[in-house]
Image (spheres, helix red, strand yellow):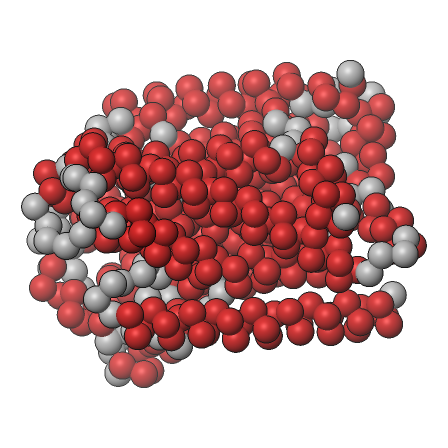
Length: 240
Length: 256
């Protein structure tokens, strides 16, 4: 019930077209890159998905993460802008279930964005390389991994958006976090676990243990963030 | 009401917005990796750039690429959203003031935020350089005149970009589109500076200007240099166009 309510709220805010547009924009990146300088990539060894993602994933993730940050800010901005949150709080609904509804909506939209991007990667492989056996299985593996790594970033940006009543503060913190993520070295395992830096990782089929470490770390982060959200709501209500 | 007092009023409105804190945190984060990796500046001597110049210019490139434009998008959100709450903007529009003047006053505040952030980045540069000098036993501190010249260059190059962001926030009422377009337009600036048509893309100006400076300082590096002739006229046209449209569009959505 809560999720469908959130969908209705987001209807006229431009949330859906923004994710659609953002997904298209990120999907155009590998296509343009291949169209302009395909000769740089065609002779590289390895599987085409790996080549395409290594070349373009930085920019695509940057767009995805910025989209998630802006979307999270907007979802809570609609609540705070005209004190709708007070009305929501007076309803017999838990505050955490509102958060859950928004999370599910954002996760669903991010999945949608990733599907568009996977489509673009498929197109590039079809057009410039060739689709080998088991291509779609591989594609699902790569994008499923990317999807998992997006989750902490989504939840943390929603948490920030929930914590700040003013949109520019939450957006500002989000932008600073994204900026920090771009400054962190990706080779350092501990530092790349920062929720905004983790989506920049690409699945490497040659080093599955490393990828599994990231998946465990994501699971741990999700548990921590979920607890943080529950505690935050309790603490804030006692101060309001 | 005179223009100056209007600008003063706009400053008062953002007094408690915590924007300066956000801008400050961003500049602090900017210099931390540079301080931690200060010894790497000595490796760059192979490119013909002195360690102190490299320390300075790498930090400023990090700023001009993403942090500064993104912070300015946040600034435009601040300026357009503070008055949406409780319909403050309707009261402002009801006053006998020309809307174009009001719009320009807000743009001046945006410029001031840009100056403040660049100023803070310069301040933090001196703090960072002092720390790096003591850890590396090498003088990283540069002449203030040179540092301020580069900072001024970034600011001047950023004016068309700021005008464009301001146009977005005035003309597009749904906040997610103005933010989304603003942030998304920053990301390809890295690609745009490598193309021939960089001067048609205002979001790449600050980064292009500072990359050109990097090329000047590093004798072995060959970066594209600024060509003033297509750039300056195009930049002026873009700025005037953006500001003109935003001045005429300002308050239209509320007046309907």
